[in-house]
Length: 83
Image (cartoon, rainbow, N blue to C red; front, side):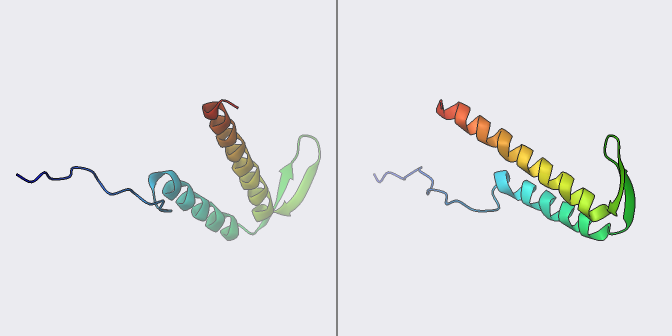
């Protein structure tokens, strides 16, 4: 009798895997949202009130969120490896 192999072929790293697909879609949608909101607006920064384009404020907050996500992911990876 012949034996059938039940092993699955190794999976390559693909950009659309669950770990990358959703964040990529959300990033693209947020960039589209930022580009579409170009009007000037008043923004209160604790005490001062500044007038700036809404896209600049949204982009700044998007960068802060992206950096925060990278920081948290890096800490989790370091904790898993025991560093």
